[in-house]
Length: 378
Figure 1 (cartoon, rainbow, N blue to C red):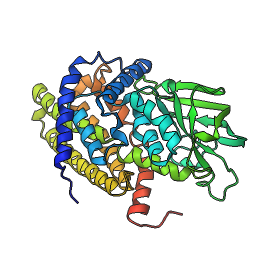
Figure 2: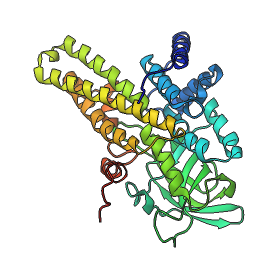
Figure 3: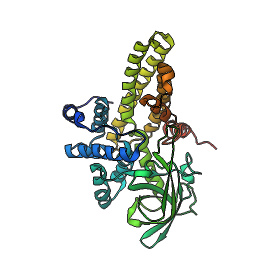
Figure 4: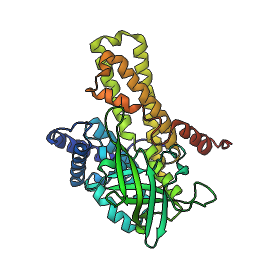
């Protein structure tokens, strides 16, 4: 497998570096990380700059390798992350690009690329988290509309979103719970939607409960065929697990360097156990970066959709990230309790990574069944 870049890709990298060097110093001050309306405005403003410079389409129109270069270089330069645009740019948008009709791609993709519209994810329910196929939110066909009733939870960015990638059950009598599910794009200003923000351990409200009371969504907002939503969902999850966290691996490798410098300054570097811990984490993230490159190469060879290898990455990355921030707490000592420090907020956020986008237990099942060919559990 060739993991090297072509001359054309290296030229893309050089041009991007030059643009970042000229653009980043002129950005406005970043908002409070707990202020999601403010963050939406800031994140969408950054996305508009990318659009105007010709870099906005990297998440679905560029090659997987160019996408990798973009995420690597923007993170190394300290550029803003996608933030409130996470769902639209990194899995709803790619799903529409891969599975949507030409009309759907023309309607939904340009506003995401311009930073005009934000998406949220309406997958999990109180009784259907890791076992997502047990979802009970129902959509009943009424002419050219679906009438939707139910509840979603842990809906990412619902508080500031314009659209929701929504999973609903359209055939409750299907022979299998994985059948009878449909993937819809739901406008968040439709009558009958109630959003109740959920406050996280860090005090942020990027998640919410969403209650749906006979919400009407046009049939034309369906991505894929009716009752074929589980297959479309697997495309969404392949992006969420396979490529959405790529930039964060680069961020973790950069943080390791910052940890080492901080440890040398405050004396914790004298602890050989800590040094070995940081060295092992450095090797772990180097290996994860190679997995990323392999997954991107596979996606490029198979039409741009990541494969089951994304679950290998997501499983190892989730645990490595948690270990990294535990090491950061050891380096900071009592300062690790200061909520004003970015590392402290990131440490609290890292606790969710073995649950979000599919629990580690689910990822182990996927690896066992789809990659190793082991029989399904009974």
